Image (cartoon, rainbow, N blue to C red; front, side):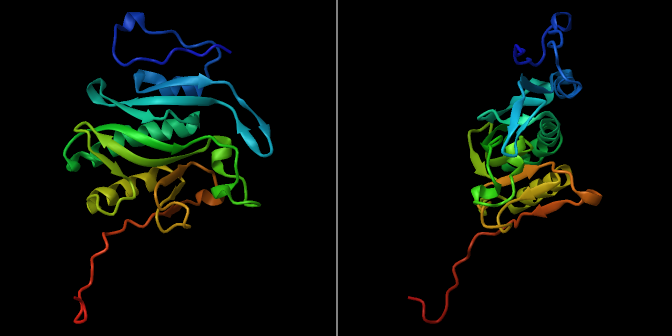
Amino acid sequence: MPRPRPRQAGGDTAREEQPAPGASQCFLELTSSHSVIADMLPPIEEHDGCGADDLVRVHAVVLQQANRVALNPAPTLRCRLAIELGKWIRQDLAAEVVPLGAKLAEIENDGSYECRSRNNVADAPISEHASANAIDLHSFTLTDGKRYAFTDALVNEAVRQSIKASACARFTTVLGPGSDGYHEQHIHLDVKERRNGYRICQWDVRLPDVPRHGADDH
């Protein structure tokens, strides 16, 4: 199946690209109003519990005034996860990082689709990454060039608390520092469906270690 070229923000509406042949309703929703720049991908056939359909590769999320937030490297995701990720970046994260002094420019992706068990532990259940239903995020860069890790205790606490709150409202699973020992340097986001709408939000927004000075210190 031929891939459509990435959609571009702005431009003459009379010249807008026609929907690619075979585009799913989800893909049309994802790229409507040029809010997300993405390619359709062919399905990954199921094997050993891995595989997914309705896949996309997300290059960037478009903010107001056609400003773009690049995802680097571009993750391979199920379309429904891509929609939630785009909404979170555009409607929540972009505003939450402004107190750091500049606008959001790029997000570093630590992992998306990968055929593996949870945390790469032998005999563990299959990971949501194995169905392209999860993404791991390491850091973000602002328009002034400054880069911040999502889990860095030195980053403004109020900003990190706000990011955590919005992520936990958007995604059904959020894992970070303090969750299981495997997410100390990045945050895991997925949209796994569970019975009765159960959600998991495990991310300790930690503070910097402060040296303690006692009477015996020299």
